[in-house]
Structure formats: structure tokens, C-alpha cells
Image 1: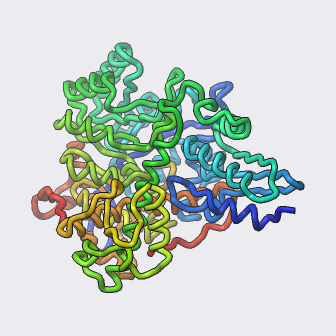
Image 2: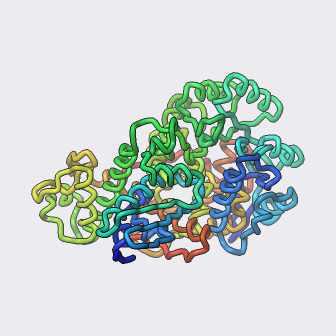
Image 3: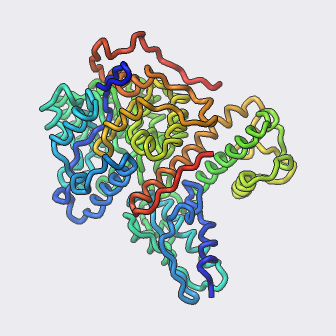
Length: 231
Length: 343
């Protein structure tokens, strides 16, 4: 039989697209039941009015990863306490899609464009985090501008950066430059400092938002509020 | 006025509410939204210090006495600016309307500045109502709430042609301070609902108006900073920034302040308590004491002097609203506009 650990591990692959963190770390997974081949998951969010599009993506992604766990034949994912819980839960579990769940309230055929916007932001933020660590180790901005992926010392931050870079469809082979914008264009060496300065606010925006969300979730559900971590 | 270590701070609270969110005011069939809205506020409330928490019943509706005491007796506020929030889709008489606010503003004219509002989706009729409101109350600013639901529409944009007509009317009437709440404009549902870029357009088209972006576009602070550096008439409204972060997330607060000081500058930042989400007293006290936390990660942010804190706590708002400030509370030298630099 499928274990809780397997399902939770699968769910840790689902990220809040806006906060760029696993829904398991964010304490958004509030319930998990396994009955033979059927798995039921409950999700919760920091406020009643959290953006319905991101909420939908998380519910849909959670269902997809749970269904991919070996031995699971049926999965049901339910979002609680949200103004659009009804539409989202029906949309995902009846496989209507986002447009089907909110008829007349969307503009393009799906949520991929939105997902891409946030993948790009996440790319910029992860690159900044990696570069900041490299600068702290003594690499100069000029050196970063010339650096190839093969020359980057291994680290967790580097892996996360590569993962997002690959998801955007950008080249991740050894000989290509480390520093590129979300379209894959190289950053010239005289622009590196400014590029990173802007990138830093993108990261702050994502991380700061995640901190507010953690705080709101903690007060909403009376759960412990984790210490803030800034790196 | 707040006095600390021989320094006197003139305090303008740039964003206060006098709301009624009690169940009697909930629209039938919309109770879940009305309740959910205030519950979200209540969660934010609890990001402040615990000794300032209110019970849920008091949070739904509070008295005039409570508000006057909190702001002006205990909270050091000299002037408070009312920013109305209608939400009539969920609250029968509105959440916090001009008329509700006017009761206090007219009773205590030396304490409150009353701002108006409009919703471009109200068309021609709304424009006339806006003019009538202006004639009646003579406001210098408006609060725009692009996320508000209205007749099946789930929000609007400053780029809309209808919005331009209203902004032209603002220019004509001398309503120069446009406070824009950049919260979740929800429709179309599949777009990035928090995107503040429509402010950029409006600020370029209306250089004589000041655009105060409430909550600095959180959670899209990078978009806000980018706009504010490009547009000289875009200001940072610090409601929520202090309230939600200064106590509960001091390290992120320091980083947000650092970035705002770098990109926007201390001449274009305005404090607000967002009362009754948070009490002004602890915010004023804590902000005057505030310094960057220990650690090198804050080294390259601009420092904030006592003079800068005086600007943010009141003098900048006094400038935008032509509020007279006693000589002893002004800055010794004439303040100059600082331009953000990219070094």
C-alpha cells in the first residue's frame, strides 16, 4: 500500500508559483488520507481571498503528482476555506480546467502564461541568490559576467537555479554563460551590478511575500509561526 | 506629535478607516464574503504586537470614542487621512464610506482630512456623484480600489478609458492626491492580479497628479520600485509595510525599507497605520527607534536619519496635503528632492 511518506514526498514537488516554495514547507497541506488505491488531500491557504488562479494551480498540481505515485488510482484534492473553494474543487476534480471552473471570467485559454511569468521571476530570484553567495566567496562581478556553468562550484543554490533555468527552456550545458536574463540573453559585464540590484528586489518580493503568507496562515489557523530566515 | 530624545515628530497618519463590518451590515447572500474580508483583515491585525489585539466583536465595529482615543490621545497622530472603502457588494451601507467618515471629519475638522473615491465603472452618473461629493466635502485626494467587485465585474484598471475621464476630472477639481490600493484586482482571473503597472501609465499621462501606491504594491514590490524610479509623481504608501512587517518580520522589514530608501527615497515615502488594522502607537514608537538589524546584508542600503523619519512620519504628507506645520516641527533646512541613483 502507498505510504504517507510517499504521498507527502510527491506533494513536496508542488510549489506555490508565486512564493516559489513547496506547499508542504508552507504548511498548506492540512490533511491526507489513504484508503487503498484512493488518496484524499486537503489544502488550506493564508486568507479567504488568496488569488484564485494560484490556488487553482496548486490544487491541480497536487492532484497530478498524487496520481503519479505508484499504486494510487484515484486522487481527490480539496481546498478549504476559500471564497472560490467550490469552483476550484469542482474544476479540478471534475477535470473542467480553469476556464471551465470560472466560465466567462478568464481571458486566455489556460494558466500557462501566468505560470511562465512566475517561473521567470523565480529564475531571476534564484540567480540572484546564487550570485550573492558567489560574490561573498570572493568572485567579482566581472568574473561572474564571464563565468560558464561548468565553472560554478556545486551548491544547493546552483542546483535550484539550474532546475528553474531548464524549466524555462534555457540552455543548461556546461559551456554556456551563468548570467543570462529570463530570455537567455547574456548580461554584459558593465551591467552586472545593476542587473543584480534589480534581481535582489525580485527575490525580496517573493521571499517577503512568503513571510507575510506564513504569518497570516499561522494567525488564521493558530499554528506556530516559524522564525524568519533571510540569507 | 511624538517626542523622543528631544526630537519632535509631526505625525500624519495617511490611511485610516472608520468601518462597520458588523453582521447587521452584511448583504444577504454575501455573508461569506463580508465575513471573509474582515477575517483577512483580522489575520493581518495579529501580525502586530499581541498587547494591541482586539476581540473579534470589537474589530467588527468600533466607536468614535475608541478611534479618537487610539489615534489622537494614545497614538501621537496630529492629522489622520480618511480613505474610504465602499465594498457595497458585501456591506449594505458600505464598509467605510465618505458619508461614514464625514461624520467624524465634520465633527473634528482640525483632526481629519477626508478623501473621496470614485469607481469608473459608474460611468456618467458616477462622475456627477464625484463632483457633488467634491462640492460637498472639498477633498484633495481620492482612494481608488481597483479590486472592488461591481455588477459582476471583478476589478478595473487605471488604464481603462473610463478611468482617464475621472482622472481628468480630478485635475480639473484640484484633487491631486490619488491613493491607489494595489491589492488583488481579481479579474481576469488567469492574469497576475497584483500587477501595479497600470499606475505607470496613469502617472505618465497625469504628471500634475500624485499617485500614492498603498502598500507599495506588496506583493509586487519590484514592479512598484521600478515604476517609482521612472515616475517623479509616484509615492510609496507605507501602510501594511510597517504594520505587517516591522514587528513580525523585522529582517524583511529592514530589507523592504532599504530597497524603498534606495529606489524611491525618503522624500517620497508616507507612513500610514491603516487603522483599525493596526494601532498607530506602537508603529510610531517602534519606527522612531528603528535601525537596521545586525549583519552585513544591510550594508549597502541608504541610512535613515531622524530627519528622514520626520519626513516619512508626517512632513511628506503635510507637503502633499498643504497641512500647516508648526515652525518647531519643521525641518531646519528646506528639504530637497533626492533622486535615486544606480551606483
